[in-house]
Image (cartoon, one colour):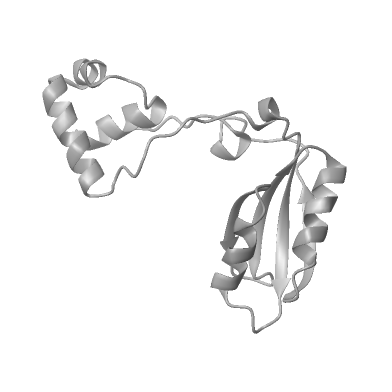
Length: 151
């Protein structure tokens, strides 16, 4: 039942407990109790709106491989990426690069400015950028779409 509740909330976090209950055969009170327990156990960590990036003027998107000097710990890189609102996601990775950044910008010139700011960090040795041309999975969260969960 919890998975069904989670699927309903992932599909639309504004769905009422009564609607979820009707769909899965529970009362609204039972759904609320389960949701409260899922929040308490941090299975559900929050509720958010998914916004189409282009609607906010973010028309250019890229992935940037970041190569650091060996002395740069991940926590230092995390401090840097927090200072760039254009970085939608950042993670350390295996392989040649030390990190991968998902960057959104208003246009190519803006992206270049962001890249210059990132490269200005003293411990960043080089970057390799990949501009996104299109999304092969347009319903993915990376494309700014809402995710529907499977049962």
